[in-house]
Length: 223
Image (cartoon, rainbow, N blue to C red; front, side, top):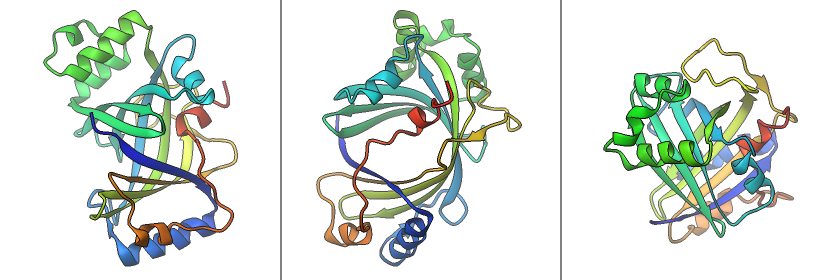
């Protein structure tokens, strides 16, 4: 299992504009979305004791979160993902789901998962049975993404973060969501073995420090 380095920074709107201009000069836009921008919707899982949320808030070094994700509300491309963290490094396992499979998981129709050939589907099923994982809430946001080949760098700007409160209607485009408190903007930087100096320079912002901000945790603030 290979882990990637990750930095997160909560930034201002002026910072977002500056980073977008700088990255446009040195990197390239993500090929997905319109002009590198797209809408992300994720359905996060947790148990009755809010294990994933509490581990994040308490800074547990080794933790994981399951989610189902789609882009621009297009149900032709849906992914089941597990984001794993260890000592500040990140790794993501992912596999494709059909709309019918995502709908079934969302509504607790899970018997088929135990026999599925995809390991991640079986793992989620096992943890739904043994840990009580279940769909918890929707997280919506707009993402602008840039890539830089050296170091396999990915720089993303996430804004207009919205919570579905306790709604879990992943595939319903009419599902209401509301802005999270403070309307935060998040800069994320991910890379493999090294972070090129040019990217360090591009993301340098006065007074901005690395943070442990979590969009999922922010979207649970109304609980």
